[in-house]
Amino acid sequence: MFFVFPKLKFDGPTAFHLEQLIRQFRFRISDEISFIDSLELASGKVKLTDDNNVMFINWLDTLYFQIVWRRISIIFSFVIPHFLLVILADYYFNKLVKIFQIYHARDVRFIFYFHDKETFSRILLIQLIDRKFREYLYANCHQVIFAETSAQNEIKNIYRDNKNFQISCLGSYKDLFGHLNNKFDTRHRLGIPSSSTVILSFGTVRRTRRNREVINAVRKLNNLYYLGGGVGHDDIRESNIYSIGGFLSNERIVDFLSCADYVVHTGQDYLTSSVVRVAVSYQIPVIAEFYGATIDMCGDALQRIPKNICDYEIFLSKLPLSSSVRYKEMVTLLVAKDCERTWDIAAQGLVHAYEKCINKNL
Image 1: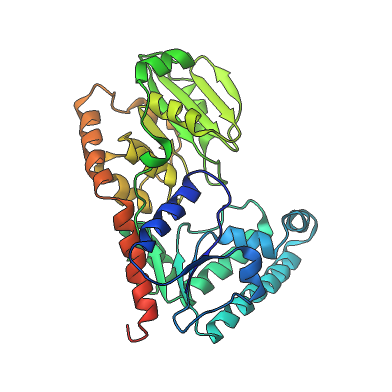
Image 2: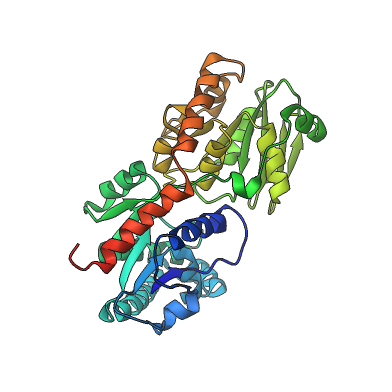
């Protein structure tokens, strides 16, 4: 039996990634597949069916919020002194370890998809738990999956442990969002100048993203236009800034992508970004740190944000115009990068990890 955690009950790139990956995976194995949720996993009583039981683990935050109830953890983070938070984090860490030890004792083998270097939760208690449990899971799983080799290299530098790993890329997101609209018409409808270089930031604002620094820089640059939206974004409407907070519909995302000359991702030490992969899907050059999966996803089509950047204004003022030779070269490079990464190829990495798990001699 192949168990997949978690069950995804929401829309968007995160769910689309897992759905596409498992759909392609189904074509290649004969074993039954079962999706399990946090309650089932945490109970330690998932019903095993044979001697080839493999669990595919994604999105640890889903598990943390089941084990550590969110409201209580927020209270703990603000009220309890740090040394007591550490003790509490150890308690929950040990609780999580015991759950996984139950499955290890029943000869369940684990595949861990290492999406992120760390939790994106702003809750200190969750961060403390994650630091220990992510390392534990990395050390005790049988196979680790990364989206790109460049992401694997970052984690290897942290844990100094050469695990058995596979690469399972992110495929195209065109099947999720569909075709883009005419750039000129969409900009006109949204009131965006046709002559501006449009920088798009979308997706949930995690604690490591620095969107406000980009917005402040764009305010000073008349030839640039900042377009942003998603959970955690500020609601701003100015002459060259249009940002809306809250969940974005697919139709709104398509409109935004249709207007964009660049997609900016300001996350620091961001291991894997579906936002970047969406940009590659539509051959929109990316502005981001030279880090993690983004390195291989974008290659030379990446406009690299300096590691310790002090002045976004100077950096953004030097972006190649969409009419330039350099910009057109980046678009051509992204066409190739997109074609090299399909959900079919992504599934092959998962199949290889699964086969190594069920073949005890590998």
